[in-house]
Length: 361
Image (tube, rainbow, N blue to C red):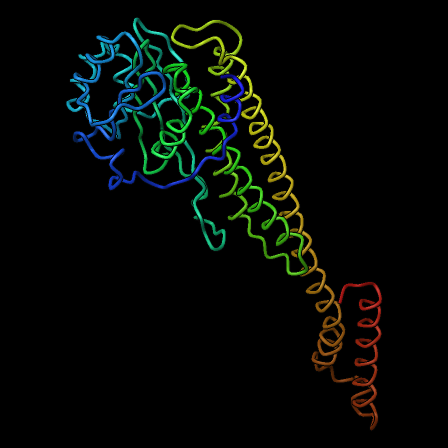
């Protein structure tokens, strides 16, 4: 069984943007209930079961568990589920209102887990307003004979994951905690995928900044930093909750899964390290871009200063001969005008060559 579980842990995860309601296994059973299924000995029992009937069946047989999936339920839509399973009011409030940090909290009768889901937003070219990371939330209530998942956001569908688990009855036979592990593993794998895509965006911005044109804008770099920060807020706080599942016994979590939660934690730590390096790299790219801007500005000022110095010669000469004194010997000399013009042009040419040789022009 453990060998089979190991295979399921790393099985590639299909990605979908939403819930396929046309599939019979994901037909809506209520306004917010996406799916409600009974599993006995790791096998999904046929038929669609209302939540109360599913729970009675499981508790009557003394084996298996109920898995209910919900999407953005209101307090009213969630009320019957809350009463049926005896969920704690504080956890219910968090599940309905969302906007929670990743955490794991133990209540009487259930373990409440909050995970932040992420999705990479495709874009043709990164701009100052491009959204790179889209976040959502996934709450999991784990009990002795039930799993209730509450999803917020337009991504992070668990339909493909449910189907994958149903193809491995040995894993599902472990119980609700196997579902919790599979969900955590899927969420962290999404972190890895998003981090890889962001790495590509950073590489593109870096190439533009250090290209001959140097067209990488500070706005794009700053926007990318904001998106990396959003990813960090979703990923980093999850480390401590997962450590609780690794370091010690936790009610409603099978001890055989502790090693596999450690594997998920290792992947999470890798993502956190990547995000930290992203932030440092973006800081370096931004500093390099600002240095390029400063150099370009200095180059412009040098050119302007050089031309001002060159034009100062004819300005001075014209100023002297424009004073209209009565006794100016050169004014009555036949070759005075062409000589002054020649000397002026010669001095300008000489100064221009000096600036050219020194790289100012």
